[in-house]
Length: 269
Image (tube, rainbow, N blue to C red; front, side, top):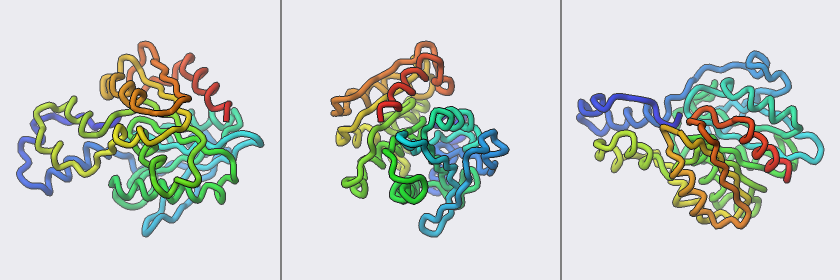
């Protein structure tokens, strides 16, 4: 889920910008810091790699691709940790895809404090290190929930201008964090103005003409499907697909028909 469920009354008692900042941090990044090894999570074929990014150390889960297959650079949502995505990584690896899953600062054993600017810089650093980590396979960005904003802003970073990704998959994308906050907490106007972690995907998707697949549940209670359609409509890509997962909510998008569409898309690269 992109936002931790908190009562509106919790914000009404906040009286300083410092407390507002703490509220935003807990709302946007309710990350699980617990580190679990890939083997203990059920994916022994993956390796946990310590990756230096600035002054912090990130935990990456890495599996190299089979010959002729792309590598998926995976940015997870803000609930749980990497171990919660182990079945997905296992499914990718069994189909020959490489995987590099980046644990955000403060999640899954990574050090540091998660902030938009820092996470984006980390993502750039990891992207640029992919040849050393997994070789020179085509790169597909995969963003899940909160991670869709990371994927979009990464793809639009100047540092990637000469080495763009081959494609991008967005699962339950949002237009911006303030837009989601406004929907969940319509009376909290002050925090919308002050938010520093905005992840404005709608502002950046218009600059990205790369193949795009969007998966979105029709019954998503946190990020409405209209936001996913807004991202899709704003994309200038000539090669793009919007797949509405009928009856799915926010956390059960990987249903049989969605996986068929996903693997079919990934196999093209």
